[in-house]
Length: 149
Image 1 (cartoon, rainbow, N blue to C red):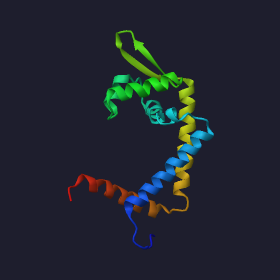
Image 2 (image 1 turned 60 degrees about the vertical axis):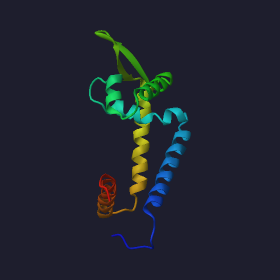
Image 3 (image 1 turned 45 degrees about the vertical axis):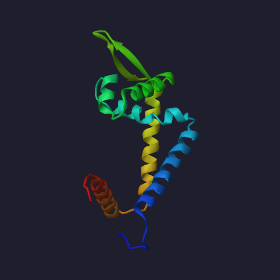
């Protein structure tokens, strides 16, 4: 179980770990020769890949808490990079179906593998009980932002 240590600052510890994770992801992106602008948008490729059935740009706009213009910019970046295509729908030319290309599907598979490896690296040497404790604590920290203290 967790042993007490000297006083530390939660925000700083979380920031440092987050920075290390981000650096590891950037290193893996560089190793796989993924352009930074695509790496920053990769989460949308994952969202599209995990979606059951057809997905349209308007669906992305309603699912993601970003401005429509930002969503459009991300979709355009991924389309220019060859990761997805927008296909007009016959019944409504304003409606654009978003589909991953083979390049987008390959990117998603590599990304999922990298995330699994990173997750394994983060969990290494930590007991299931300590992980349960960690998640309870991190959930409580998140809830603390919902409550006015």
